[in-house]
Length: 427
Image 1 (cartoon, rainbow, N blue to C red):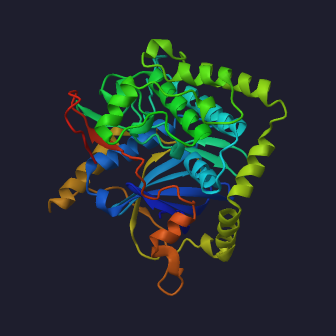
Image 2: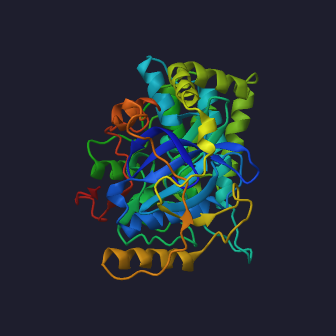
């Protein structure tokens, strides 16, 4: 995929699939990356392409230890992809589900630490400013367990700003359209109202509640009723369903998921600091080594399997620059991490020109040059491709049950009418 060599597929679901890959940087050093490739069904839709553009442009501005970096947004022929920081681990959702499979629960100190660290990355995003000092007004809108990665070495990364809202976003959310996962939406988000950072704070409170209790704070038989429940239902205190938490913890979660934004923590950092104080007071011996040990033990099979798959490939053969298929490669957003030269992070005109080129080509008209770059991309040949590469179930197993279909309503977009009797069309 351009200069990136795909090793194996980690997961596939939603609108994209994730690969583990390697790339040789300008310094001659080989780096591991994750490649998020838009699925073929979505490549013809400008809306989804612009969503990836937005994710690249927003995340490329964010340099924080608790946010997974974006290195590049590019296209090889009509295949769009993001090159991202590779985190060897599992997401919070998979971790909670794995604990549930073993008839246990996620330890509260680990759950609190994971959400606290993700909140610190979130606060960094909220605080981003433009060149004139004005707020970029970045709102994640999808702070959820599947977007919090916990590495086998104990690091925590917030990912997927694909539906984030910011002043620099080019994707336009139509009136009445909501984006996110219903179980973690704030009341104002279910109504399609204008959001601020406190909406993400609410989501973080709902995520923490789910992580320590293994169930959502809000319950309803269907999506329409769930939206109402988020706005009206008062959850039971987490301590009624989870060991190791107390009334002080209940108070922190309760404040985060207050119905009125003004009653919540004012910022993600304020919530994170409160959680850190609670954890230090109640678990004084906690350290990141405990997180690393827990993740490595719970996902021992997956960790061993991914290591073996990585070793199966002779990486010395991946340095060849021979152009094997002649496909055109264009880098649309580049932060210079591997190329050594930082290009404009916000190349709106260039991206617009590229999209217009694609439209004209699709319509049968002549297209202007797209400044292609020679590609050294080489997918597996038919005789070397592992049998499981095309096996979706096998791919899902690589990341436990992260993207397996569930009844959790992992919705990216939806239409919502304000009348509560109207069934929302989620899809």
